[in-house]
Length: 107
Length: 114
Image (cartoon, rainbow over all chains, first blue to last red):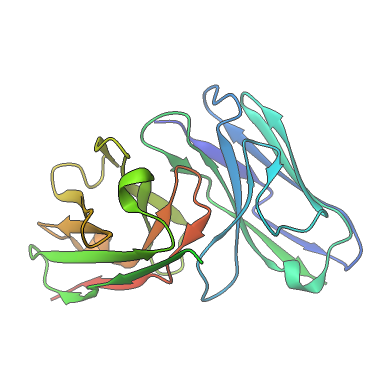
């Protein structure tokens, strides 16, 4: 099983600042990689797939990069509505696996 | 508009069975990957199962041999038959479209408890 490790687990950021979240895969997943955002009481929302392609309707301040085992989600100019838990996922090999999540709080 | 609506959750005793259903609109289940993902209370996301357009199915090790995913093309639904349920299966179960999940249902809560 491919283990996905996210860091940091929690961070507190002021509005307007840049946020960088990391995810490491225990094996090479190429670009078979996605990021999701989940707010309390809601289903997850796809942000990024293919490691760097924004999903439909996702604001341009969200960007993804990386390949292989190291991936990054960047949120430029953090907005208050970006307060959420962010999950990474690999869909390269079975079973598909998610990271443990990274909680972004607004200062 | 693409929509997924789960149903069938509830309270069940350990060792019992439950069948979840995901009703889909705006696309057809037989032409898409359909996935089940669950989330235990206060925990992260756990991938459970997927059914391919061609009918192949895959499962997480934690549910293999106990859960079965299937689809009904005529009803445009995807089901998850869950047997020999354990306390650790307690979670909100989401159905979602795709291998990378671009559309999600609202989830249905399954509670396994005596």
